[in-house]
Length: 301
Image (cartoon, rainbow, N blue to C red):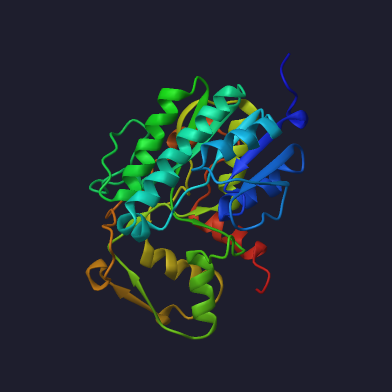
């Protein structure tokens, strides 16, 4: 007998993060939500502490919860740290995904794996789900290897790729790009923003709503779930300033070559979201729609 939507047990790994916490908040309105975390206590759902890279801890947590759905969002997202600490990146992003997928399969759970635009080289942009991944940094490589593990191990899964997640509140002790920029501009501080990196910025609320629809409809395969607008970091920053009535002159256009990053960044890793636009009722938002929603969610504006 099929489990009703309101009876689903959803386990979210990385539930303290920017995306995971928003997903837990929205899912908890209707479902039984278990919020997996390692260090930072989650706000929403029933907290379940485990390290995804520890197979025994993962197995114990999954036996305790016995989830119907698993959303695997726990990942080491610091692109430079992944480049300089490859062992930790592999352990967290690849082995952590293997442990999670194997435990999800044991529970006969539907798995949603959250991946990234950084699986692509960035040479062409507007990537579709059928384009061949070709990462240029170690973070992207670990996320691609994790995707391949999910495809090999799971019978029923959805791989969702997203890009530059931002939201109205800090999460897991970290501040996202939009909030960082707003804080700087409110203090009238200048910021240097790159003009030669393009992507598809994604509001965490929009991403969480799209994910919930995928769960509810048990949609399988690969979906690009990002914002619907392809733009440079610089233009994104200027739009944020405009929407929040802050001074865009404080934003200084800069080249990537001016920054001493350990890892290469794709020039244009923007995602084509036509598949999601056609398939989902909760559609990828344009950047103007998303920033309008962000403004309604941010507390101090």
